[in-house]
Image (cartoon, rainbow, N blue to C red):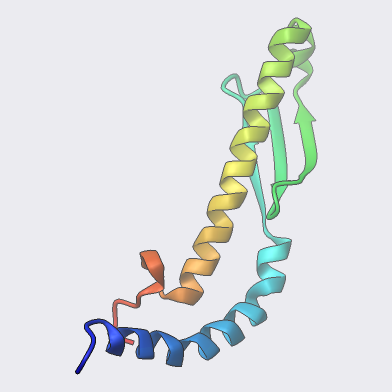
Length: 110
């Protein structure tokens, strides 16, 4: 008796070692990746690390004219965008290792 999808599972198992080796070799690139987020006004710019940690922020001098509530919203928006961009970059790098398609399936039949 054959099970549907068993060939697919066996192929994934064969590829797992290669993916693991490639991912290990790319971990430095992933860990060092950074992404930037900018507020709607462009007055606040935040940089996030791959794990979402905020590593730097930049405030345009014109932002000092904003009230504290608005400035806080600017920081929050910029930080959220930086963290999302960092997360997207990590997904992109891992996707390259896994073949670039959802679920890790390669489009070249491997």
